[in-house]
Image (tube, rainbow, N blue to C red; front, side, top):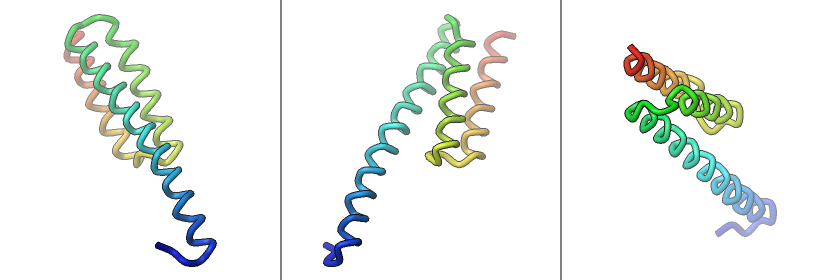
Length: 86
């Protein structure tokens, strides 16, 4: 446990940011799962994929994901969508 006042504050700030990032990351995973289920079921899958891709871009902008990670996930979703429509 820190003794210095600024170090104590950093612990609190980091805990708050960690909770926010976990929440956003969890929501992102949920949207990706919804997109995958929509592709498999074939019901309005393009809309679900569009939402998931937007969430991925937002996660990159907020620093939750690395840009290459988001690009890879978007690519996987696009390939699944194209294969389902073909």
